[in-house]
Length: 131
Ligand code: GLY
Image 1: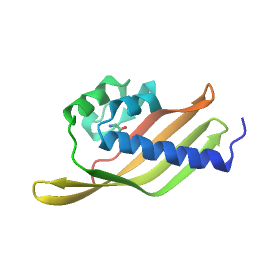
Image 2: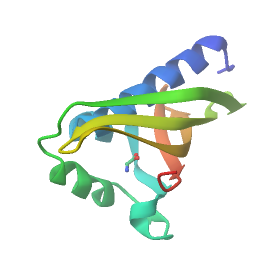
Image 3: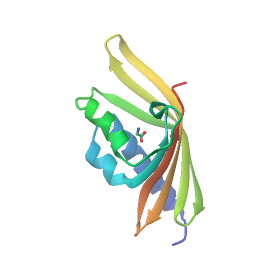
Image 4: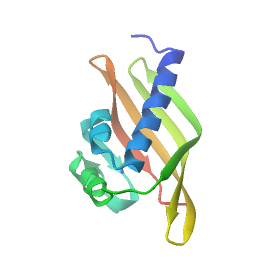
């Protein structure tokens, strides 16, 4: 399949859906977007590469009753690596209400998507510590 402009739009839509599922602690949606062998580097993993979904599920279960959270991808860029592979990079800006009032945080994210069996799967990500 040849990459096209609509692939980029679809990957932006799926990435926003992924962030919204994290914000809403919506495990069903998150799992549906991820390869079961998803690999990740993120601050929670203390510099280790984690493979698979159980590590991530733990946090969804902790956040079972999330408050309002708004996640925005700042200047997202989709780079098609081939017809069936893409990297999306952006700064993730998260706004939420905490006891002390509204709080904003930012981090840098790189997410890799692969098209298999006619659909996109999230296969790897790397997230910075909050900066
Ligand atoms: N910690 C889950 C994710 O950022 O995809």
